[in-house]
Length: 432
Image 1 (tube, rainbow, N blue to C red):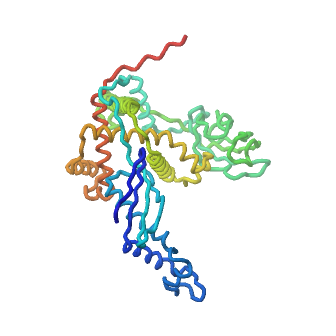
Image 2: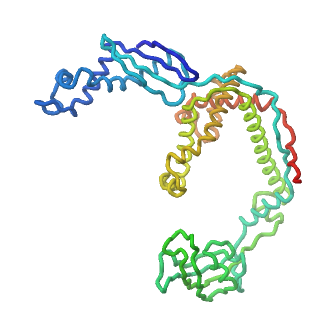
Image 3: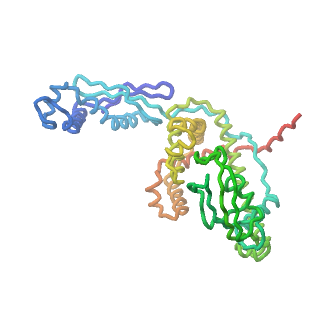
């Protein structure tokens, strides 16, 4: 194979790869062997006609298109290597021609990684929030711990808002039970708005052993169409009334949560909150600096790069939704979207991601950042430690080139961040 007629317009490269007659003949014969059993020639049973007979009946070029398409992957890879290209997006086979010697010329077009003209990316200013943890925030976390350690206590009194009532209930419409309208031993927190409007309100003051008939109307927008807006009656029996009893905040409570004292527990909560806020503030600061550097950059963005990132985002979200037990097609119907319309919603994020990737690669090149084999081995070691796996096992799942690209961009990001200047957020303008 040889590469010829290579040209570039903006970020699109067109080049031709010529296959000599022997290379192309190999592909033509492979196409014949693959298809001969499906081709009907008058006077022959399927699969019994020779290649010469088939070509005589349908033409010498009957297998040329498929032969060229079969050769395309290897020919494209050869051209990319010879021309030292960095293709992005999906390449296209734009032309197939047969030479006089019965070789083939395959012409490809592909987007390539763009050249970016960097503007200022060092010493940029960006707002950075100051970080503090208040006593109120610590109190809220302590309250969460209290609720996690709460116990339910049966009380001998009428139910109040916030109590948990254990109930048996059966719903009827026009005296006939309806699907999903009955249960036994159900725990219901009064005031949680778990049931249709009016249900919990009409159970206020109920006592253990008491039975009530609740006359209610389902909301007009209720998901079950046969019940929407319909008048029903729920017969409810209260089995018990329970109160959530929260523990006192003392050293015993602290010990139950693996601390010696309340002060030690609060100090740990304060540190965790501070660490989280600091991480968020640092990440937001980095994002602002990188966005500013992107705004200073000049670059033509290949559509193929954006399309690739859109596909990745859709696939990642589909995996997430499927992991929640919902088929992605069903999820799209639930939100009233088509695969195409949902994919288009990812375009703004995909464009931003694409610009950031181009910027960070350009910064890495400008700064002469390189990732050595030792760097890769160290990163594999960290991943192995995090996932409790052997490094060699991690390598089976994490592509070395992808990891190298990630490390390169992280270091380029550090160049931007480490030189960035933090400024206090501007006070919001006072209203007139």
